Image (cartoon, rainbow, N blue to C red):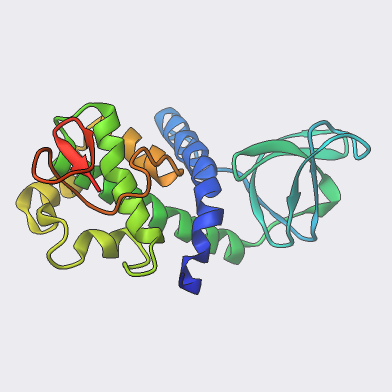
Amino acid sequence: MRNSKKWLAGLLSMILCLTLAVSFKQDVRAEGEDERPDYIVCKQATKLYVDADWTGEIAASMPEGSVAIRIGVVGAYTLVNYNGIEGYMDSSYVDYSEEIIAAYEAELLAKSEEVRMMAAMIQCEAGNQPMEGQIAVGAVIMNRVKAANYPNTIAEVLYQPHQFGPADSQMFANLLANDTIKDSCREAAKQAFMGTDNVGGALHFRRAGSKEGLVIGDHVFY
């Protein structure tokens, strides 16, 4: 498997943080305040603790330069959300770097847009299918991203010639341009991105009855 696929392991957990960040932005936007989450940068490798106590249980390790969302301060500790994990870090390790945070946000936004593209494709291919069938289409897309003989990104997988017919359709373009994607398709895309694979690693799907395989709704996955 190509080295460029190494981002997958981290991003499958990062999507949890992304979801929190997006929700945070939406809530704040509704109130008309600053839309940016309160990011911090870990200036030196440290531990994230379950409680505000360095002798207690460790929730996660935070590498130097890692980015988290500040939730609050308790004594000498800062409560943060790091890749979906809430915990306390020694406030002396809290730093701020506009450059690091900007790069982090750019990566989150890029992957968020790819998940949105996947949701639009799910709607084109399986918008009339039950949730299981919608997740299954997303799983095929993610299985291709992870496979060595397919492109490395969701966008490249979707636009690979002669693979996903709707990629060049007006319907797909309009869903993205107008952001009229169904909530169920967004949820299916998020679950698939986070690692849900209900098709056993399948890389293809067709209308049911056209080929042997796992039948989910109107499609067969193989």
